[in-house]
Length: 113
Image 1: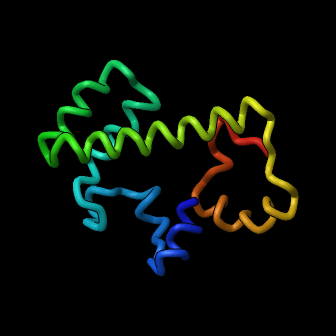
Image 2: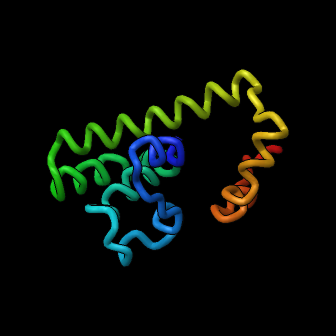
């Protein structure tokens, strides 16, 4: 989705920002607070209230709600795909191999071919 939406909106996509140290890049405003919200949402629900508060303090409530909605949407899409057994066709996996390698996606425990 990220690659397709970047192309559709004529934006340059820097995947190093997605998987790198967001604090040093300066490419994304409020990156540490956004990353903390994502991490808390996916990995540590106990820290979710403080992550939400930190993002509201850095931005505003509307931004936090938008960010939470994006996290929820991606989580939902993943669960639906996993629950239905959806797999990428072989040619799609082939076309994504360079991207997958550069992002280190094969390192995730949930990675499936």
